[in-house]
Image (cartoon, rainbow, N blue to C red; front, top):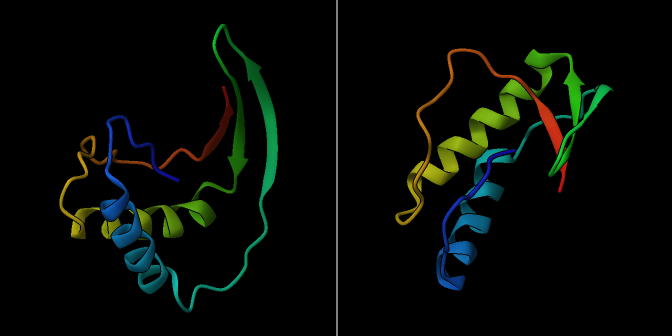
Length: 87
């Protein structure tokens, strides 16, 4: 849902797990469609649709990360583009 692009100590990760549970509690399941796929030099990227279906959990993950000190987040994007990467 969100990339962490810097080292994080185990205590912070433990704190984030608890905060994530609280933020994601009560969310129901939703359907997604995968594709198209874009192979790249260092990763394979897969689009996830519908975009708004993934925007809700993505926003909740961001909120959880903002509540735990020690996470540096990139500025929020005006529009969520859900994707999965295999590196």
